[in-house]
Length: 148
Image 1 (cartoon, rainbow, N blue to C red):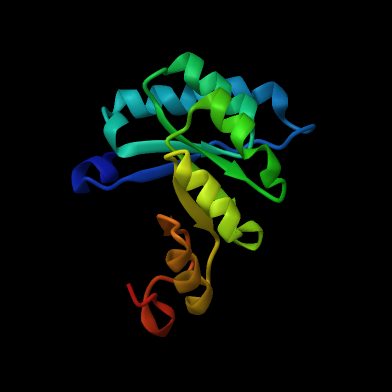
Image 2 (spheres, rainbow, N blue to C red; image 1 turned 90 degrees about the vertical axis):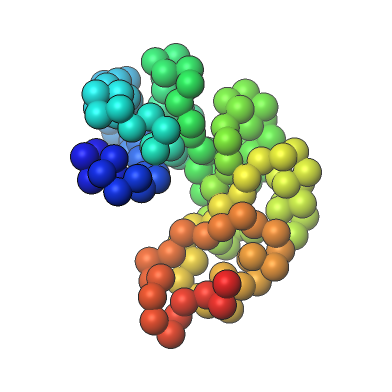
């Protein structure tokens, strides 16, 4: 937290949980994360994300001003229901689930759209051409960097 504050870096803080295995800790995980973010005064530099919607519900309860994004895996049909309920700032999709129709639908509802984890330059450029706002990648530098 000190590092992101010192260098004014935006942090994607993913709230991790595993349905059916550690749900009893989810509230504590969220509470501790929010407490640390506030303790260091970096609320404007942190956005939260999670695949676990109950964790995002808890986040909204604990910190109604928190910026967060919904992560979706393979079932993208639920995006609108989840977005309507939680009102995230953005939707994050798995790269293998993205279609032009889905991009258009999400963007038409004025959500930012990011795609993970894109490690192929051609796919990354295709996704950007489709209208996504950005991608997450494991490889940013060198020959595999995107042309934008």
